[in-house]
Image (cartoon, rainbow, N blue to C red):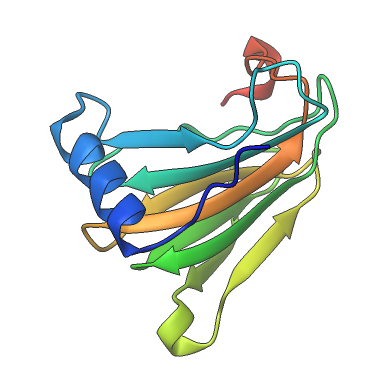
Length: 134
């Protein structure tokens, strides 16, 4: 059994990788492989990372984010692509996370360097289908 501690050091190490990544984000996976029934990861994000408007409908998967550090906006969209809502996640301001159903269009706007979320969604991993990206 391998126990993985989520601590300041792990967040810092993964954030440094995100800063030097072309995509300005980096995952640290806790699941052993992409076929696991539950995918759990740290997702470290830097301002300027591009997260396209998408949903997880094909196949249907809920997605849960818990913010561990930093601040980001979760942008929710109507089916026509117009903005429905903007919810800011920041633990020090009392908004700790969000659970997004698979049929909800969403994106993220990262507001602080070093932002880290703990993300959970059903496995196995499957790339987002083209019909689920705006």
